[in-house]
Amino acid sequence: MLIELLVLKECSACRQAEAVWRAVTEERGLELRVLDIDQPEGQAQARRLRLKTVPALVIDGELRAVGVQSPAEAAALLAPPREEAHQRMQQMGFTFSRDNRWFILAAQAYLMLAGLGLALQGSFLSDGPARPAFLHLFASAS
Image (cartoon, rainbow, N blue to C red; front, side, top):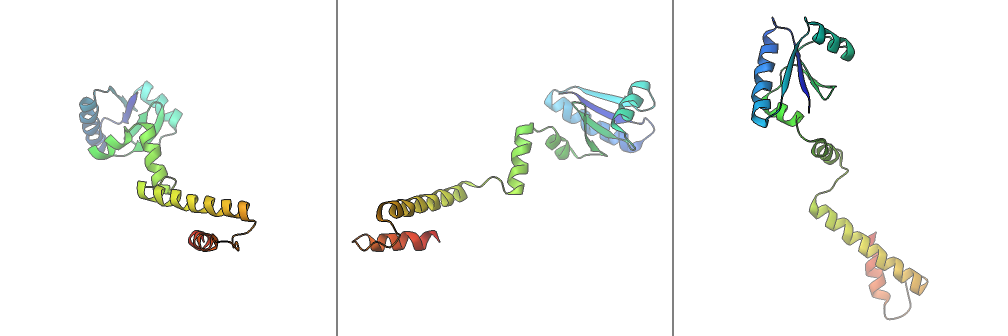
């Protein structure tokens, strides 16, 4: 993982961001490259990313944040992509908690049993001794 911080040496916010990122990368054993946008390498990176402000954080060649992050925010930005994607999916409602998964599974089981009754009897309301069971399944599923 390549972590680059684009800064301007005279900028106080850049010094704060550099201190935060140095602490976080040292704690995790990662390498931090600090690029001054007054230097040719920093200018080239700023042009490539079309940066208008500093400090700017680049992780693996992708602009990930602008401004000063707290240590917690910095740690979140370094989270593995799979974990980050899972958190986003949960926030959007694409994943369910364990109890919700059980409720959905139970509803599917009820619907499958009702469908089996439909296939075997030709209707949900049979005239035989199983009539109350199909009524119960049908009423529970709807």
